[in-house]
Every structure is written in structure tokens, then in C-alpha cells.
Image (cartoon, rainbow, N blue to C red; front, top):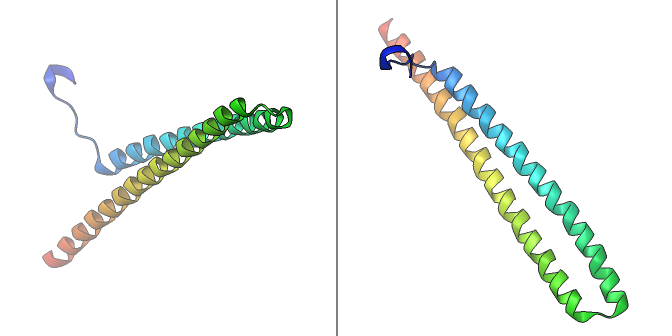
Length: 110
């Protein structure tokens, strides 16, 4: 809040730019999480191969379940990233529609 409870209204273009910046940074964070999970998955797969060579089936089952869980987590992260991208594109579309409608209003006054 500003002085005496009043706030200055943000420019719509600036607000959209700020929201896009925040969403892009969230997408980068999701990418980092995906890469981290994939690296851990590779380590688990290597451990799984070692356990399979030793013939330890109980450990193999546990590690296989962990691999499947990590793959599910990665697919959910990709889905959330796609949803964020969809929101960004919808914001851009809405902004362009507003700009076009302002342009048409200007043409009608002529």
C-alpha cells in the first residue's frame, strides 16, 4: 500500500511483462527439478544393475519402484510446465486482443 492507503495503478503492459517474467522463472525452476530427478534416476538405475548382477531381487524391486516413481514425477513436472506455458500464451493473446480492440476504437472515431 502506498501513502494513505492509495496505490498507483500499474501499466497493463508492465504487469503482463512482470507476470511473464515470474512464470518463465518458475519454468526454469521446474526444468532444474526435472534435471535433478533424472540425474538421481540414473544413479538408481546403476544401483539397480549392480543389485541385479548380485542377484538381490528384493533390492531390485524397491529400486525399480523408485525408478517408476521418478518417471511419474518427471511427467507431472512436464505437465505443470506445459500448463504454465499455456497461461503465458493466453496472457499474450489477451493482451494482443486488447491492443487490437483499442486500435479499432480509434478507427471508429475517425
